[in-house]
Image (cartoon, rainbow, N blue to C red; front, top):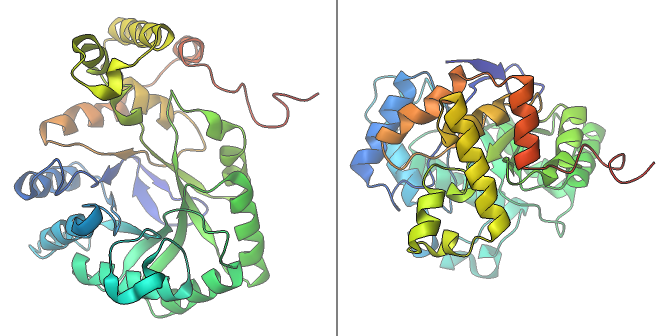
Length: 326
């Protein structure tokens, strides 16, 4: 396993992050426990979850599964850099209107306590703001984080789904408080979704914020099964692909065939080649999918391959404003 410092910190995380979103949803608990064991044995020390996973009335299910895995002992919790998130409405009726989406200090404190209980731990290394909330001041947000970090319940603050300017504003506010601020941004970024290259990635790199891409296979679009699903018409997600998208997948499939690697492997290897990226979030549904995802660490894409991938999946062409202004 390869490791890197997360953002500008001294915290070392594996170059792949285990995402748990499927646990308790499309992956039963027995298989989820097995996947976590395989990941840890492979050297993956970075685990990601969220209070909303399980969804709706079942929110918190995934955290409970992870907590029961920790409870097995064997150094599991001690070996894991654990991240969870808050912001969403997880159906806590007792909170009344304060159950709605947001990043208030009230919500941070209550959601953190709930996550720690479900995860059967006293602290989390990373506590993500799952989405931006521009109705709450950074004085309120950073004040709440400072309290929980001071109490030893949170190691670092992190963000998810923030715009580039949100990162800049947040870091300016943190600096004014002599506070470290955000160390990682979890963001949708993959070969088929390259808009973050305009603003988010440059802002993150400037501020020393590590990028943790979610959706590295774009919901399966970049997986080896997308073309088959589009052809048989049984998957609503892929049945509506237009001619351009199908040609992209055909060209991608051909390139991966020439390289001798799966589409999954190449898509993640492409992310790992970007200096802004610290650790893509992989979300295997089965233990069998882990092997293919781990192979991405062994793949080094040469300049000609990177150029061909740019041709198949064109990005914006660089960072703003240079790509559209003189």
